[in-house]
Length: 290
Image (cartoon, rainbow, N blue to C red):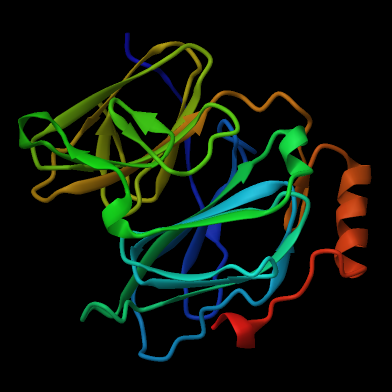
């Protein structure tokens, strides 16, 4: 049985410096898809050699942030002493836990001749018990992201979060969750099955695609129902297409989000701000880390 589409929508602009950003989630129809409560699409763009692209040092609490870099070079600093750069194809994951300050900058990839940037940033909501844990961090180079070819030379699938068949991401799971990047060749299709009561959405970053026989345009976010069933992605274009498919089990605890914090109550939000302003999240030592 094919899963039914619940709704589709476009994002809204949320640019930072030289980066052109469409905020896809939350939107007017959905605040979350499984544990995912936030998605920014940094759209493909040719960039100057020197960019104004940093977010500046800022706090998080109660979530894990995940940056998936299609093109570019992403530099990460945080107050727990973590530092790394990942290049095109790589992933940065940071569990904020009970509080951390980080700074992240996306630039053109110094390892390639391209001057384009293209990336995604997700926030993954943590269960309440994990919101009180210490921060953690992972940097995954592009060649270590699990991937495999699709049947009949149809393209490939990368597992950014969760697992698919014999592929398993190194990113920790605190609930049932998945994030796949599917690349589909022309005149090919790919079908994936979803279990009952799993929330799932597709995002089409750059090109149109067919989802269960219906056409959707580039830039659309498409959410499906929670019934068990299949999603068939089809490509009727002349070139390959990309689809981001993500979701997981519903988050059943209260969600209260404000600014960079996602907690379970207003009092916890207030505490998150108090702890940040009192210095409990620490500071970034740029000189030591760089």
